[in-house]
Image (cartoon, rainbow, N blue to C red):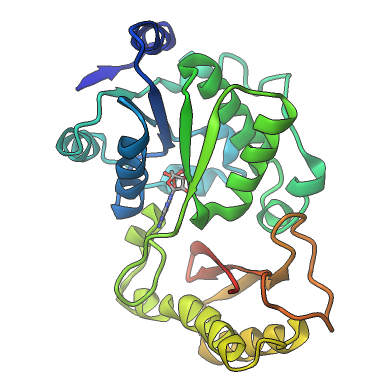
Length: 286
Ligand code: AMP
């Protein structure tokens, strides 16, 4: 497995691979890898001849400097896991190679989607995401790129960017990998203490209450679904926790879904702070 730090070198590796007639799949991450990341890599392996994974904690997408400072990191362990998965190349650039100025002057934005859900409480977050993903795509020029549905808004905005800018890459969105009790795997889960960890299951349980209610009544409305979520979350959270947002949304526009229409086919999205740790999750209602 190649470990590459320089932009020119990852570009040369990818270009050489493609010139040899092989396909390249790309999995961008911020490291501290878990089973969710590994799933993306395994899906990538099914599609392409060569797999490139990037590990880069992108400062531009952190609107909170404490969150950036506390973001868990363990590159040595990550490299061990990637070797076990037979990844071909890992790209680990230094921050100063990517950001020479304090903030880049050029941004890629999609205000219509960025001003929804996570973008409301994290101003600038999605501009940071699109900036780095756009640049990584330019350098790596992958045939395929893999993202998790766990970050639903992120994969939607990346798909839109790729489509709008006619970027020559095919995007794959992979279902969320969960712990046994339903908590979506996330690098941030490592920061939960025992009591926070047990409260965190409330997110999945609340979403499943809605999903089960739809199984019993496929005409369940968005307002009924919202009430189920509301009651479940408010009953289960403790005084140290805080809700950022939750609701039932149109899965394409991320607009709040009309109250009196069926919830079936819509997206539950939830973001909350369990203690100091911000967790997000979502479920497409089927
Ligand atoms: P991150 O390192 O958190 O930036 O995540 C890197 C990629 O892994 C993103 O495309 C995430 O959506 C995806 N990912 C993170 N957690 C999960 C999960 N539990 N299941 C599936 N994909 C995930």
